[in-house]
Image (tube, rainbow, N blue to C red; front, side, top):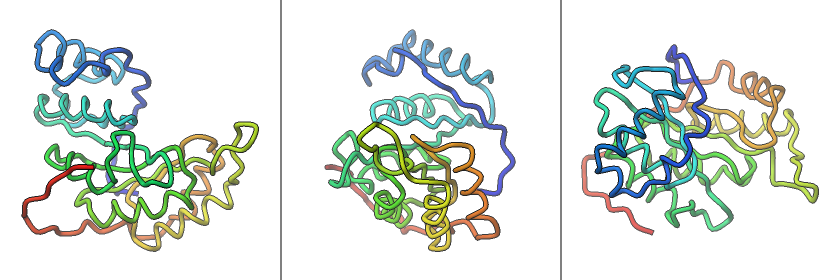
Length: 212
């Protein structure tokens, strides 16, 4: 939907290396371990022009940003989870605060995934779309978990929401998280076909602080 031709790979689990503290990543041997980990799972050299790394939990996001900053020519695709109706992510930040804490890394895209269905995720996607001057993604769950741990949103009901997001100019990239299937993804693709992706807003250069 972004309009670029890329080859996508799923990195999968990167193990204990992403649980290192920020101070650990200042140490050459720990950074070398992290670099080797990403290189192995991506099957690409560290000198590649761009590597898309879509991490999820907030501590991992910040470690990926640190990795990207120390690898010239690479960028990151960041995605975090709004855990509940408080509108806050796992770090305790709002979506807007999270963006301002990550903006210096110039990510290729930033988005929200997991925890919530499309209906519940919408206001936070709207906040992010109005704040970030980069591509925005959404990967909602197929609704909230039911009493049996399953997900009840069908491809038809979810794609109706996704189409609405796209028509309102909130999205550049869309997909699904827990409970979604290939049928869901096909329905999403049909829902956004022919629609214009979100236009990147021009933000004035000024001081922006990030907190809770």
